[in-house]
Amino acid sequence: MNGTIKRLTDKGFGFIAQDGAEKDLFFHSSALVGASFDELREGDAVTFDTEDSDKGPRATNVKRA
Image (cartoon, rainbow, N blue to C red; front, top):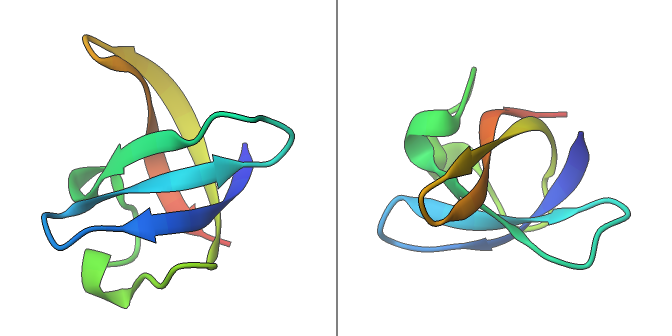
């Protein structure tokens, strides 16, 4: 899937605006592949997979596009 980094926090997680979807998707820094959390900037294009968690869907395998 494709999206854009919408918001980053200072706690090691953020939210992705999914292309074609209204709801933003949570991601944790441990879900990043090939980049560190400090390298990300709001507005960066990313690709990702999704999985269900106990708190709802979240992004996994997040890579900068």
